[in-house]
Length: 129
Image 1: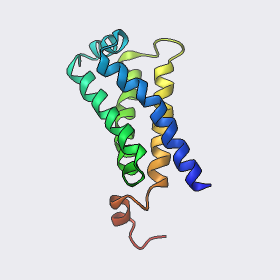
Image 2: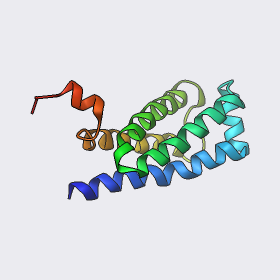
Image 3: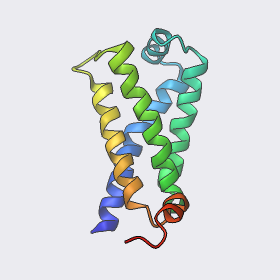
Image 4: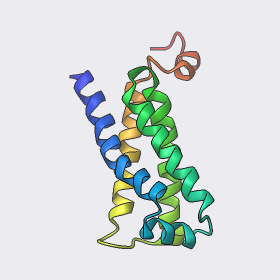
């Protein structure tokens, strides 16, 4: 059961992030407009796009899923903060905001679920049960 939950949250995050990084790296008009509003066009769009690609690849490898979850959490916290502070909840009842919340939730669940494979957690929590 734990393995099914582990893979489910990773696949959900990956399915959401694949089109996200594709649109950023391909220069979709909406991505350009979003990063222009953040005064981060084009550099920020490329950095976030490649970071999301890295998250997808890391989440698909069980040994590195903890690192993908950690990086995904950081990126999604930034995305959520951008929506709250600058972008607002644009387009279709804030679909981008909701998807960022879903990916953040999946990343945090994966981060917890993969704590045995995470060298940082194992050092911090060594000997504690």
